[in-house]
Image 1 (cartoon, rainbow, N blue to C red):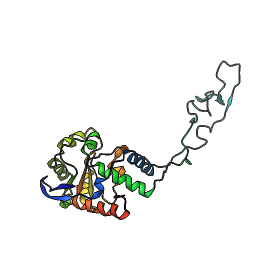
Image 2 (image 1 turned 135 degrees about the vertical axis):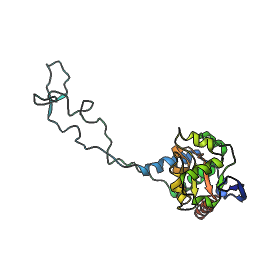
Image 3 (image 1 turned 60 degrees about the vertical axis):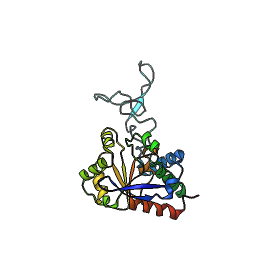
Image 4 (image 1 turned 135 degrees about the horizontal axis):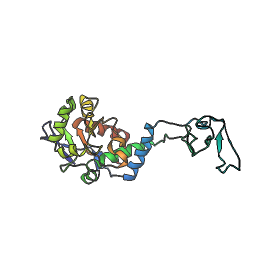
Length: 247
């Protein structure tokens, strides 16, 4: 499978062979499962004080008062006196089922399964039907591969100009209203990463770190991705070494 490589002016300068990983099948179930498992790795455990809402001196008045037999704040002469307290579903009361700090929210995923999901998500980026199903506005050929000099771009306005020259002007208009736009995958840490992140909806990540979190936001594959030529080489080595594709 071959594709064109574009320069900073959006013109094709040569043709290259794509890595075999892009020939992998797209497993939507695997991608979605991996996404939500890895999404838990970003969550911070939280909980409530077990005594929150119960630090009051309250006791039921019993029967004969024509009011509900809820525990009521003791005392007199204050706004809180006589109000229900120390129970759930009342003003300043406790939560019925509060989040607990001891709850395990960090889920684990097998390394090979994670890599297989990432490979499958990468393969989905060259499927124009899946890309359009995500709402991206692009009618050209996929994948979009650009020359390595693009990684040296250090100004946001130049990144926007590049996207327009690559035929993504409609996409830029779309992401002003909807959050997730194109993703740049680069070979390593470069000025482009900082320059691209200033555009709403546009992200940039290194080929070493790219995962289903970047490629399939919300667990839905088919994000519009722009690769640099060297990034494809890094991806090829990354997945070739672990023996994920070709199984």
